Length: 566
Image 1: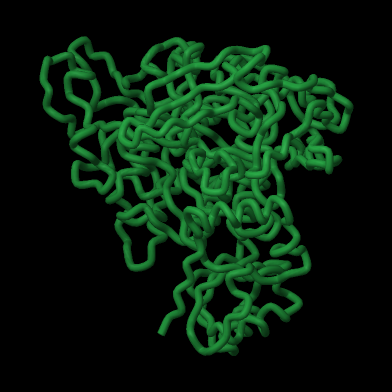
Image 2: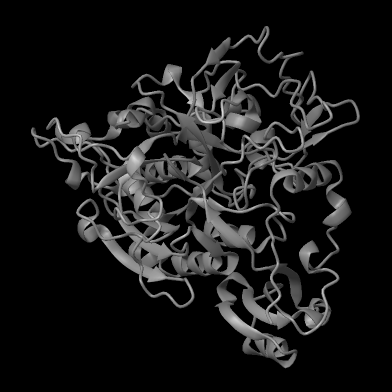
């Protein structure tokens, strides 16, 4: 009999866990522990799926020790200094005592970060058109680790590699409908959206980049940590073969331990250190107020890792002008629980984004929200398109950023992941209202969003500004890590010394430049007990962010904005 572990709490349980970890992160996750909390106190011969991280690349001898304790190898992750195993619960303590084992965690479930629900206006909001004639991602490989990519005219021969990491499933087609949609945002060429004037309507950000299809999500949008880690491992192995410079991860799960111990986070860091930019969706839990935390502390793993670029979602509002764009209330907010990392890093369009449909039989396809063929062919038909549909989520926003990274690398091939991240954050558009509200059209519930750094990061993606920026951060891996914050007994928030070499000390790249004065750190960011995040937020170099930035009343950078929903 296999022991089943539900490793993602939900509702009030998740809210209580989030608050507990924020208030006392060392209580459950001390650095001396070698097993995730779900595994403690397990016993008996029942099987449990786990990931063992080793201090160095494991050998056959290491795997042999697991087998000698009744375990079996389910996935070899040696390039990530890890392995996935099924072992008797009662033998976990023995494995933890192995001096070569760094940490043992549950092989946890991962999910996509999109929901089923317009036009190409989102590209105008981020000024993508300004560079469309010059750069299209030619020669750049982008790995899409998702639910697969179904071959389509919008991808043509640029779908250069496909592999499934789902146990027992060799097909790399997209039965869920998520990965193909992401691939279209990243690198679709719009072939199926050609209108009467031979104009392609739904062209991706990097419409001529090559796609590497690494399928990990099944037809229900679910995966396991080990599958995602194996796909990351393969992307590193194929880096030189296909010039893979970008990995898109529009998926995630809850945070259960420090990113320094989480195997999923350690895997994305390995890819980052190999020279691949990893773009991760922040998650869609920004409306989670299960413990009166107003959606703060809900960023998913591996988006909590300070190396990667974590992306939240904006709403284009149906206009080409970005000045009226608003944050999507479902977009997850930072800081990350346990490590207090400032996330997301930036935001990008993610609401009602039209892209490629894998098949009308795909799980995510919903005929009631399908787009009509008239939206791109001007034929007056109300028939539902069989080639495109719309989705919402930080998944879509991550795809927009991944395509942008491909353009930046095409322009300057020597850019490192940290240099790209720094440019994107520094050049981001930083003018926002003080707050906005959104009303769920089904439930009638209203959600208020504050435009602080834990909601919008360093700002709104601006492709034109990013491509025009010539500033060059140091090439050292990790120099652009997202900063960590700490709150003292008085409620003042400061950046943890040494947590971010680039943002904390450099005059050129300091916090006021990266985030801007309008992206306030302010007051009244409540964590269920009205803990204020300070009235004079100093960041390690005495960069003060003013006093008493009041949200929704006398904020200096805008007034409230009302919207009817998402």
